[in-house]
Picture 1 (cartoon, rainbow, N blue to C red):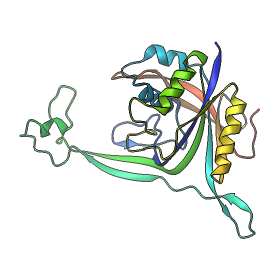
Picture 2: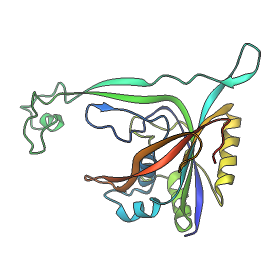
Picture 3: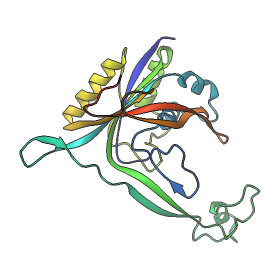
Picture 4: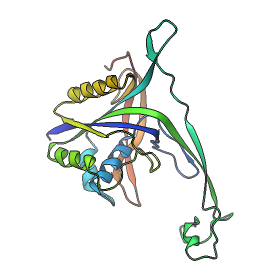
Length: 244
């Protein structure tokens, strides 16, 4: 199947890319997941529901992530990477302060799957973690016959785009071009980073290479109420290292 590479620039005050967190603690990886990026594309297209056919096309295609860091001058005047900002932890109360006697307000109080009152009351405590001041370039392999429609949708999205969670609004243009090869998209990503005085921190490549190998359950097979995912292996390669 012929394919092209879309370059997505993901920059925002806050980003969150959870791949296995549920319920009261919502963690984030330190780079975008494939499920998060494909969810962003679905928002751009206005594609709701399960989307099994669309996701089946994207499941075997590559996604490479380049993570960048702000630069600074050290004591000797050399340009070095700025230390990353710490994770932001946001404490939230879900369903607090509502009157369960009011038919409208009670809709906002968490309940069991059967619609009954939750054990211990409806109010739930949650902790949510966010990346702060992060910069990523995503080199996403897409089918050639869908590249133009995706490019147009990313520039004129049907639904709002967000970087992992709805509180994470992009602060720069997401779509940065379609390319015939991954190398061309990679070069353009580095050019954008250079204009912003950013330095490459690490990259995430699919497969097993020299670096930190991870297994992520982030390849979506079905969205909607009953989500399904499969695993993939990726390698986190620090700047200065090279893949096999």
